[in-house]
Image (cartoon, rainbow, N blue to C red):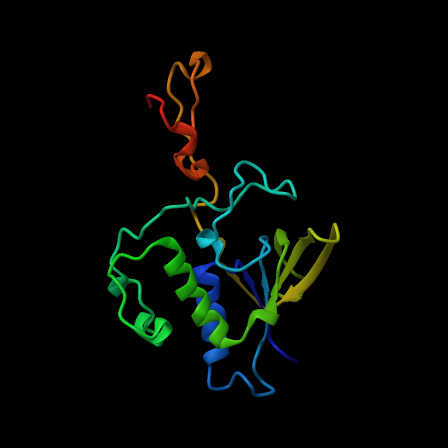
Length: 200
């Protein structure tokens, strides 16, 4: 019986896991595991996806992305580079050490495309529950947001790669309830246009 593996999330960590399965020397053998990835967004990239939405997305789910339009990396690319796929290989030329968001996103997705596992990802599928199954594995229940249906499937292993920046932690201070201005968590910041000409 074939081993089944569920990967939850197609952001950088989930994509790295999918890449590892695809790169395995036994990946094309009959004994290779069947891998299914669940991604609640409509595209891969996780937190590196830029989305103008804040609060809830078009399906009523909390917006995962914390990305803002003009973000630049605060770490050098030399510390972010994949060992098997360099920035220079991807772009065909050297690039600056601190690239903007779009460049990092393109690089991450370039490696994923080269690995050829996109057909293993079920986009617009939000995992609702993971529970132990009777056989010792796991039952994954996901909501297909495009068709508004729920499905449950059994897996031998589950890799949780959902990220840890998708739900903002808003500290509470006395006076929030009576403050007359706008309170915004960095998770919901997309650009500074709305603050133009104002005291902040």
